[in-house]
Amino acid sequence: MRVLLVAEGKHERGAGEAPGALQCLVARLLERDAEFVLERLANDNIHVHPGKGRGYFKKAVRWLLEAAKRGYDVLVLVVDEDGYSDRVIQIDEAQESPKAPIPRALGVAVRTFDAWMLADERALSNVLAVKVPRQPEIERIRDPKGACKRLLAQSGRSMSPTELRAAVSREATISVLIERCPTGFRPFAERVGALAGVAGSDG
Image (cartoon, rainbow, N blue to C red; front, side, top):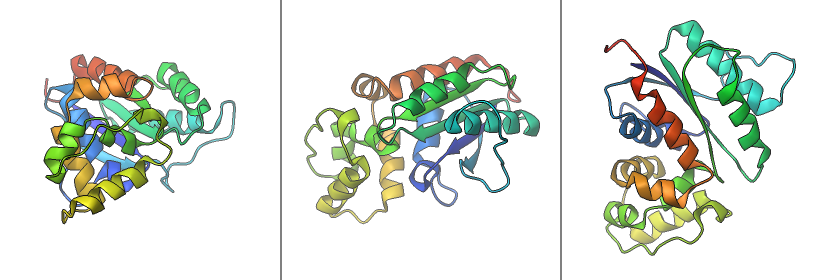
């Protein structure tokens, strides 16, 4: 299966050859072999055409069309909610859009992708090698990125924020993320899981 993976931030996409946090999560949710190609949501070569639909809906549909054009088997795309609940509606509309005939799993991280990294305190404790307390009401944390930064600094571990997120994504219990992030991660996980049966190049 050839997967086009689209995200906004570098922490989701990763750096260098090592898989980033989003790829780690998607690979675990798919539970099958997949070849990933990563793209940044804001790509100067991918232009959103004017027309009906709001901004994030049009961005998602444009990437659906691009994924189909390039011959990918599926598109996986994640954006941050950033406190704008309308983004969830727009991405849900793009998930159901018939404008591009390609399987897809589109998601909105509430409030940001970093919140998913805070959901499993056991995983955080293992990665940071310190006792991390349970973080309250994950999807209501105002600054998840800042919370991740503070935990990393307090731990004294010599790892980058991108490495932290990738490590947590490999370690976290999926069912905990689903339970603690019901608005963002749960529907995304269900959509990715539904792609497992899509026919791809691996047969």
